[in-house]
Image (tube, rainbow, N blue to C red; front, side, top):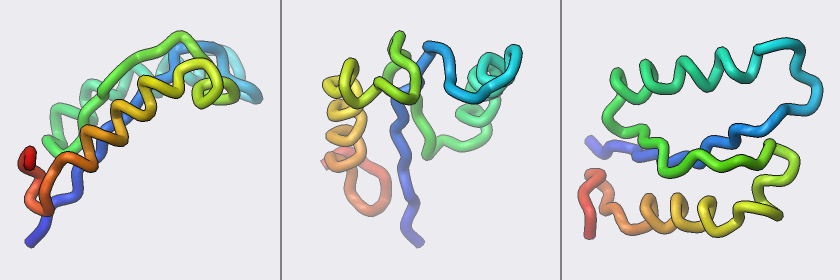
Length: 78
């Protein structure tokens, strides 16, 4: 059985279309999700929002992609 690993870059800026503290509540729940699933890792938290993360923080996103690409099918570093 193969494991799928996910590495994520978390945008901490405001979010288009969100109301109140919706995004902050989602971000606050991430630690619980990561604790329950060892195949999920937050690689970076950046100041951009989801509309500008690829333009402003593309290096952090690219680093997260490289982390996953460096894993073998079992989730171990190559």
